[in-house]
Length: 140
Image (tube, rainbow, N blue to C red; front, top):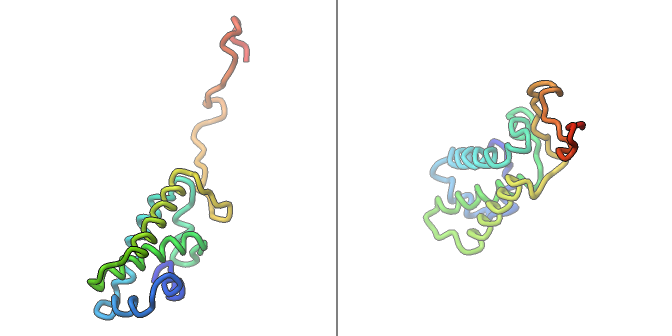
């Protein structure tokens, strides 16, 4: 597994369903997780340093992102069994997608996640200055 651990998936999904869903294809869990991580990266990259968060050597394991990923990957794995995912599982997926949307729009911000590095473009003189336009001499 890339970011999640087995205990994370077991916390939000029945272990029996997880075992059945990967019994025939061991790499399924990793591939499903990789696809969902790509989705999460694209949604939160506006505010957070996603390369640092999902680093292969030392990822930043944040509880909220773990919960979102566990619910999304768990839903995908349950769908692999060929059974109907169930209303509670669909609600879990909807919750995870809503949380990602809130993070994408900046409604939810976490100070303990690494922020996206600020790229300095230009000098301070190139930034727009604001002033009082009612002043006939246009003094700032």
